[in-house]
Each structure stands twice: as structure tokens, then as C-alpha cells.
Image (tube, rainbow, N blue to C red; front, side, top):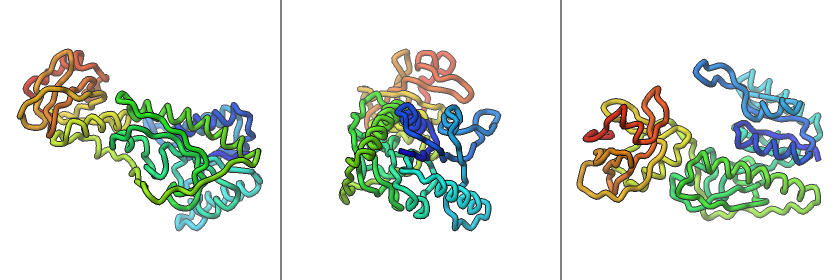
Length: 317
């Protein structure tokens, strides 16, 4: 079976590694163009590109796959990619967090299978892991689905569930789902080889959309209930990192827990600050901050953070 792979971040790289280790023939990888990253803003290859090059796999990085793009450069790159795909005569394209829309012209060349990090039809879209935690879901999972032109609307082929634990962050849950996705896509292709990969249309009920995470969401509003803020802290770890403002300084909040403290203090008021954590009043309930970071500083447990930044009597805006 000849497999073309399309993906960009680490979530996709885990799946690509699983396919390579399972012995599938992968003649071509599609991934996003190199992007500036790090303090020096040097161009950096995606995790998928790095892995593909390690295994001597050809890599294409078109800006778009739409040959009808009004941008001449994008249209030119899309046409070149389309011609390369047609010349390969491959059996299936596996897609995982690619980041580009696959137009009908691409979908028509060969079957396309997507690895999606949610229990479809819940959390279609760009940020299913973040939104599942933020919304207080008790479980999520991975869906292997056939691709259509709609946003994650294709038929479901395999689905596996994963519990969302109280300690899970987007980072930890991402790693669980990436590993699961790698295992599942190998199983899906094995079944496809045997002609045993069945599909089921997604139900119309229960559709939700996971909008892309923006940095503007990072600032916590302590007028919200503590439960909602606790979920946001976990959902925004590692990106974009929840934060609160104290005297005009943005403090990142990496870890927190629900506290039992009671009182009628205004939301954002620091009720106590000691080695056990920094308890902050919320619109409903209280939140204990356990790991924080000042601009330019390191992530520190509350006890260490307080040594250089006393917060007793302060207020989070």
C-alpha cells in the first residue's frame, strides 16, 4: 500500500512515525512551509518535515493546494503539488493536523483518511483538545474518518475513547491522543488492505465546533466561577498559557486547583499566599494557583514564586 502523508505538528509526526515503523511505503509527505520560531525567529521545519527527512522521504511544502487561488504563487505551488500527487498513483492519503484545506481536486485523486483528536461529531475544527478540557468534558478520543470538503464532516471509520482526568492539560492529553492516533491509523490501513474498513456517517445531533485558540483568550476573568477558570488553566497549558494581571504585570498561571476557601471578597482578590499556593477569590468559589511565571522568568511552584514576588493583599485583574 502506497501512502501519502499530510501533516505538520508533533501530533501528526507521531502518526507518521507509526506508519514508518509499521512498514508502509510512504513516497511523499506534505507539510506546511517552514516558519520563524524561537528567540532568533529563524526558519524552523515542522516536526513532520524533520521526521520525513530523517527517513529520506520526499517533502513538499506548498502554501496552498488550491489551484484556483487568486495568488499566482499559491496557484503555481498548488498546481505543482497536484501534478506530483497524480504522478505517484498512491493508494491513500493520511491527513493529521495538516493545516491546509484539501480541495476537491486533491480529494478526488485517491481516498483521504483523517486522524482527528475528538469523538466526532463533537469538536469539529482546529482545537478539539483545548475545547474539550475547557468545556469540562469527561472524555474525548480519536476518530479515524474519511475526508470530505466539509469541516470534519466525513464518515467515521474507527473511534476510541479516552477519559479526561482532573490532572490532564492540553499538553498531557495531546500526547495520549497522538499515541492513540498512531496506533489507530495503522489498524485502519491494515483493515483497508484487507477490504474490511467500514464507515458510518456522523450523526447530525451533537455537533460542536472547536474554534482556533487565540492569545486573547489567555487572560483570565476572575469574575467567572473558579471551576471555569480551573478548566481554562488546564486547557491553555501549554498554549497560550493562562495569565492574570497584577499591578500591570502579566503573570502566567500554569497550574491551579479548586480551593475550599470561602468569603465575600471581590473577584481577583488574593485571600492567602503561602507555600501551599495562592488562593484567589473568583465570581463563584476560589482558585488556588500552584505554578506561576513572571515575564522573562522561569515556571515556579507557588512557594518559590512568592519568595521573589509577594502577592499577599494583591489583586488579579
